[in-house]
Length: 76
Image 1 (cartoon, rainbow, N blue to C red):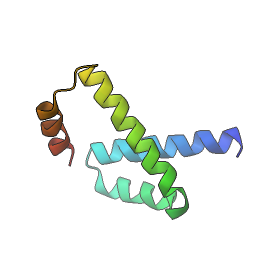
Image 2 (image 1 turned 90 degrees about the horizontal axis):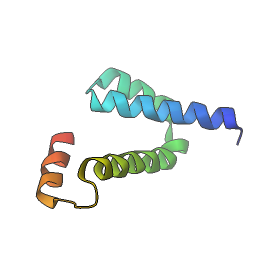
Image 3 (image 1 turned 135 degrees about the horizontal axis):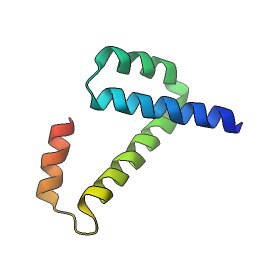
Image 4 (image 1 turned 45 degrees about the vertical axis):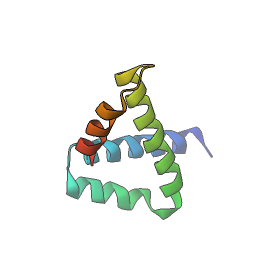
């Protein structure tokens, strides 16, 4: 895989995550179609890593499970 394709894919994943968080349904759907089923597993790993990084940054080493549950409920 070329470095250019990797960076393009990462940009697409970031744009999709941003659209989802901003609740931009039309843009999110458009970007999801561009990602396609062949990149779906890669995108799922990207989203999981993004979520894990955000949780670690917010909570640090001491995870408050009740606060995390409130946070994830708001994200859904």
